[in-house]
Length: 238
Picture (cartoon, rainbow, N blue to C red):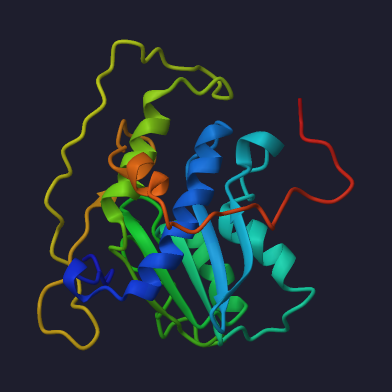
């Protein structure tokens, strides 16, 4: 059963939406660099203290998800538990990242779209709050923030041919789908009795763009930059 919790659009806070726009900027940067378009921003006391994006293709390293990239740059300056920090990420953290976030004691996670294959915040496994993992404190994780934009970014990526794949699939004749299926019923929003909503995303389907480009192009939107980078002193794999 899906235990992920999503906040209905009408209940989403403008501050959270503003930081999610920052995460979307990082996801766009990932897409521009032929990476799975996932971006994130770690925020403490109203200030971004780290931003990152996926770099798995660049470094041929499957562990270089956006969240872990940023964590590597956070820990030298912020001692766990990081209970005063909120993570904004465009896609629900996978099981690996959700576990890492729990181990560093993250305070809160806000994400865009869910992931029904790898989600660690309730879509697949309840890593974020499960009492079975009692060695580290649980954290709140809620989704649905710019969900459609996050899904459409993923669709744009999976419409392209991944030259890093062992057997790249020809996708020249595929048509980008713009319809977003109705979300499954999941948990309820904290403080609300209404069902929450979002649609799960499969990271190997031809899913995902929409108004992401329009959204990020509006005047007045925050401008993102990569504060978390590749490992120091190294050169990306050719």
